[in-house]
Image (tube, rainbow, N blue to C red; front, side):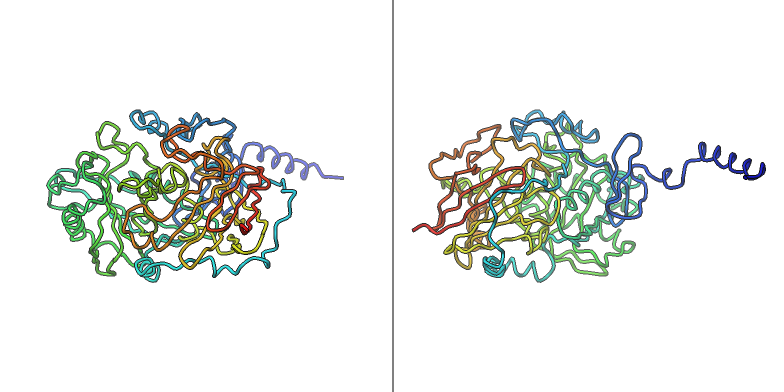
Length: 497
């Protein structure tokens, strides 16, 4: 029998437990520290997951899959995150509203009925690694391409006409977190993207307006490079003695929040080296003012999503895929499929393979001379699934098949545009850069008309999506969708006799 004293102690402990929250529960809050990636919890009515951001384990709100049915990928998002709601409201003169969140979805438990060919019956992965040009290989060997362990050192700077004493880590936190989480979400392999930002603005003895780098100037305009590198040199003269650039792959330069896009746009400084005490940087540098200058005529309506496009240019990892239409031709490249042609979708799975966001194990390499059945999972779902089917034609050319569904940054893709797409890749054209935007072309299904003018809410080549029974013929190969569902698309590859 329990003694009175023991019973009293038990009662006191029980009462205390009602009023003293556990240490574990108290620590669970948005932005709070967590112990292991993948842990889940609930706080203040929100579902949280433990994620790694800028090298730190923190609780983040889980993005819930949308139930709203979009009729166009340009449509406003009724579930836009509150921190980006003002951005969406200010997109008035732009024909297409970008995505403002990443909708994470896992592969459905539903399985296709048609069994795919064994991977042992396919070609070795080496035969799908197309030959690249000298420039690409130079950046690859120097570690200058976008990669899962990329480290960017951000140098905050101020000038005499735009001083600042605030903490840039706080000023730019929303944007830096967006960059980190976006890259992490798009990457299936283990990653550790880092954007290191110094704790203060380094002030030059110059005026920002004198550099003449307003948003009126294209971010890649060659004639502006001397001014860009003059600004970089002036900033580093102050910042370099205090910042340790060891371990960084690239250097970015961020202004105070008070700087208008009419004074400083976003600029890519290219063609010269950036020299610091610890390291000489051969890659491009990125200079920008803050992204919420809505009243400026030079505000970019696709912010913050525009960096998902620009990063491929900054990190020498992809060009635009507009085809030759801007140079007197008739081809429109990938239409609006993918990010590098239109800038409103997630990157093509081909691009993601090139920058190691997916691994070789996620690629199926099918012969053009042998029939095969291939289950291609949706390219934007989470997880290291087989998401890229490639049929090599020769050392420089190949056909890529990708499954498009409403998830990731593609969550606004309407049902009419969900299915498989096929695009033809020519790395010789891409790397020669004779025509900017040349080298990747979406393939129109047989017996369909793919309109090159914007349709379905501003979408070129929207009809290129393959539904069940539809097929593409190219280079003596027929590619047919034989089954489709939430699981992706089952594709038959066969030689045309």
